[in-house]
Image 1 (tube, rainbow, N blue to C red):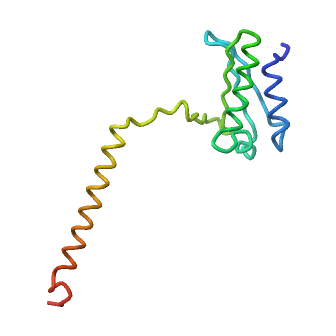
Image 2 (image 1 turned 60 degrees about the vertical axis):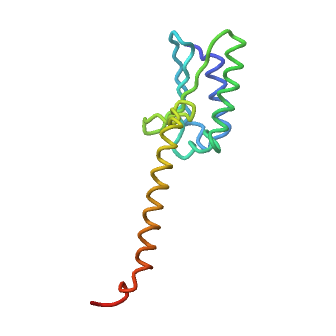
Image 3 (image 1 turned 180 degrees about the horizontal axis):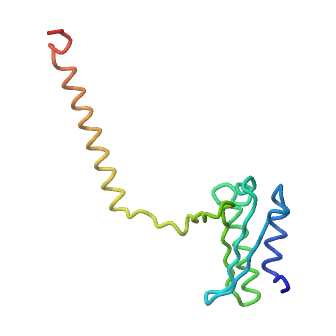
Length: 132
């Protein structure tokens, strides 16, 4: 089976970025949602491929989308951890609802107030320093 352009593109770009290009593997599958590329690199090179805050991975995905659009295909890239685990993209993670975040802040504030009140009570008690 001949390699497709999108698969070759990922192998070439990532191969030039990493310290162990022989460990770069791209598996290409096609399903009803489009082309799916699964990228695996050496564990030491994961940080380089992902980049700060995922910027490098996002850039590669953006270029793949452009390449796919030229060929009327939807191309997705999944970066797989070397030990077989899959790292979730920030976009895939659901943000915690604002209501829950606000409720957590209220609970934290209440706990802080209680702690402050207990400290004030200890400071106000004149007998607290005496050993009885």
